[in-house]
Length: 168
Image (tube, rainbow, N blue to C red; front, side):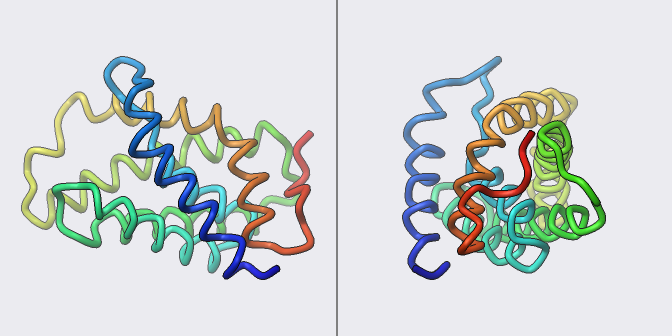
């Protein structure tokens, strides 16, 4: 099996979780951003190029369900996926805590970056004081799900590495 056959079921499951399951499981009124987590996990497990590519497609799927300009999530998720993959290449030893912290920081950056880019294209209502609270909750929820997501994306984007990166 190749990435082209492994990735679509993962993306389909992520869309279902993102749109149907996690909106029902809110913490302080904020749901996890599963599709952003998919982009981050792809960057962690497959590197910068795969993180950007998977982030782009995950973002396009997210854009289908949002009232923001089409492509905004795709741009944001691809930038975050690329950044995580580029950062991952500089880390010599990846432990569980590095995965969790990288996911936490990247998720928070992704939420703030989404709002910043939305503001640039004319959606001024995205940036508010509550944004940082939302970023913190999304980052915490995504970090909690990171080990499973990294394992799934390792299987999907890097054939032959089903166990994923070293998670100790």
